[in-house]
Length: 258
Image (spheres, rainbow, N blue to C red):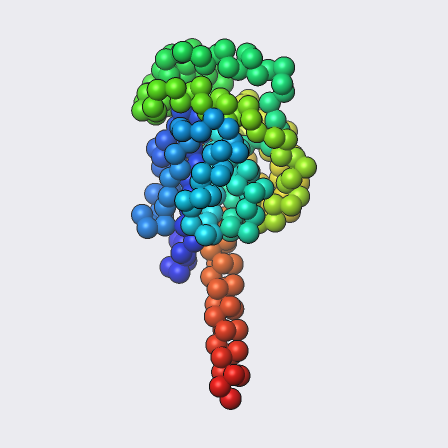
């Protein structure tokens, strides 16, 4: 159960060809007033996406990113750490895409129908092998892809390719961070998760068993439990800090009157 006084907005940043549905397991317990969903279908660089989001986001918020969204969350934290109260990196990756791979990545998505892209290129790498025949799970991921505006795959590929090497920046991201990953994720494997968890000053790493890249949809209960526990701790710390500030302000005002 989240503390009743939790007020810091939570900004959810979806992955490639995903929308708010990918976060259903972890966003459902939050109030509508507290929940924000970012649109990552417009921009062609991670820098542009971060600048646009920072221009419209609340003064202080919790950034929760899945896959591509985690890449954007890292850029937000690097540019405006004072505005990020906490951060959750789900199936994230702090490394850049090697320059030698850029042309192939662009060619793979150029003019390809989203459903075809998911079915023929991505599906086998997205989920745990035991889930590969689950038609409902596959249909949901394809439905999210089909709901994206035309050209989204190409634009989001540019966001992914434009990211810097975030590893040197991790040590300066001094906010509570949840690293949440699937134990059998071949897109963002364990090595990458350990790398982030070890470098981030206030990281909590939870690895979900029997899950691939789409752990939020594959193991929703386990993801919800891990996220709720972490967010509850963040909220408790935040509420205590707010009360301390209020108490200090009251004491200061009383001293001035006396």
